Amino acid sequence: MLLMSVITVLIGIFLDFCIHQLKIAHYSFAQLPSSPIGSYFLWILFVVFFVLVSVIVTQLVSPAAAGSGIPQIKTILSGGHIAGFFSKKTLIAKVIGLACFLGSGVVAGKEGAFIHLACIISHQLAKLTPFKRIFKGNNGMRDKVLAAATGLGVAANFGAPMAGLLFGIEVTTVYYSTRSYWFSAFVTVTGGVLFRFLYNRSRNHSSPMQPFIPVKLETPDGDWPDIIAIIFLGVLLGVVSGIFTLSLKILVKSKRKLAEKIPVNSNVFTYF
Image (tube, rainbow, N blue to C red; front, side, top):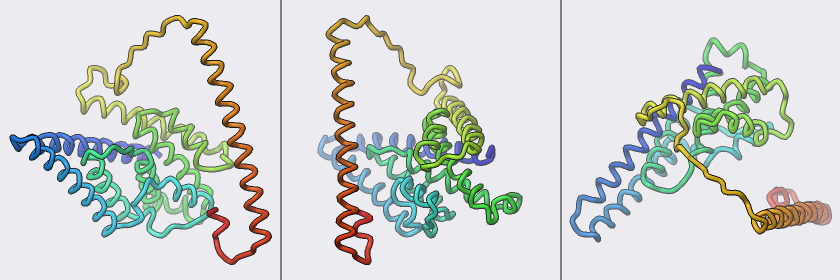
């Protein structure tokens, strides 16, 4: 678990460094021409080039690296199998593709992709000789480690251990074994603390454990109109969420009735 946390965090620091350097190069590259039109053209060209590089690398090295990876991980934890999803090629394609895509300046997150990276690392470590006897034929242990790796991906991405722990509990499975708490808590705390320490050191922050963006909030005393507005907003959101839940229930029942009346040998109603 500790080895998985350290490797994942080091890859995260490396990715952030590459993305940061590409963004610096992006601004410098766009300032080369003296005319605004030339700068605009080079700005767009830089984005298009590195986005194409990320797409081409993903398609040539491992198409399984495309996307965030969270839906596929949930499928695997539910008993499914996706060929090549945890392979070394997928790891390489994910790192290169993610660095090029985010470094190009495209506004996108890397939480899902980083969760996928953490799961790949856990899978590859499980194949090493010292750990083979633990995971061989033990799907339950594999699922526990994968669930912990999903939380580690969040913790090592944001430096937020508790957020990673809750993510691993709430998102990965319908039924969460209490035995998995230890695995998830250990990797999320070690990964989150280590990432924040190394990140702040790399950015020369005054304190190695200070938040990424120091925030100082000054909350004024609320007036009655503010309190009434907050109460109204809470009631409104409660009604909307109730309507959404009821609508979803009606939709699911209608789908089942329609599937019984029109039996087909396909997955049409599964994806409806």
